[in-house]
Image (tube, rainbow, N blue to C red; front, top):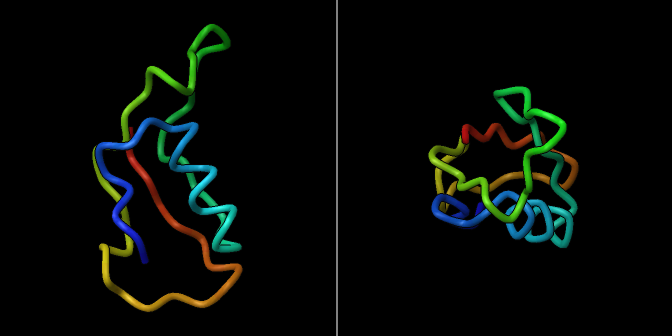
Length: 61
């Protein structure tokens, strides 16, 4: 599992997609929210933990 905390949502999604991981966003975003402006505050599992392809990664923004 890579470190995605501190990345914006757009870059985090790209990173996880490249690793064939799914994202589980812990908050609803407004229609006018820009992914480039939203920073990842927390993630689970934590960086360094081995995960399988297709695993759901929980993120908080």
